Length: 148
Image (tube, rainbow, N blue to C red; front, top):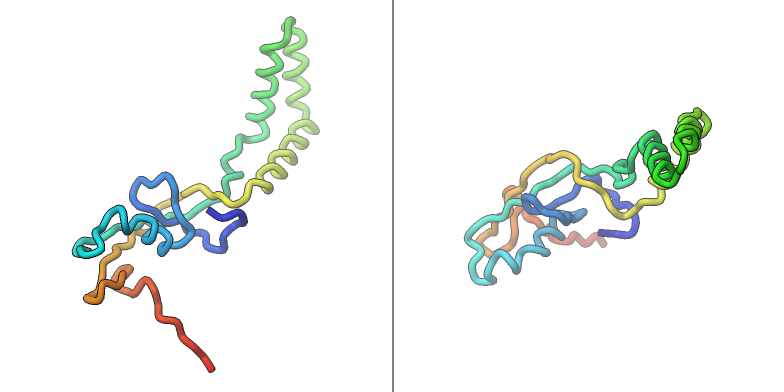
């Protein structure tokens, strides 16, 4: 993946892929040599297109973070009254708001990776008579146009 947020919201990969690409061409290039012989491209290749969401959206909620912190403190507390004090403090509105701000700031710093969200389409890669790849019947690589 890239170190900055890509401009495309889609991710591309083979069915069940753990690693996906920002570009269908990158997925094609990644798997071509492993799946097909240079001399025999008589089959086809299915590449899935998924919507994506920022990885930061997968962070636990502020309430869950505070619950976890209280539980961790509870493991170290020798007294039930101390644990109750931590739990009461973690439920205060200003503490929840501060944790929500922390979570939002933390999420904003997690860049470069996204999570696949929903399957958008399955694209079929085939090859034309010259061996050039086609995506759903259209050329994967468009010829460059030169303007004077």
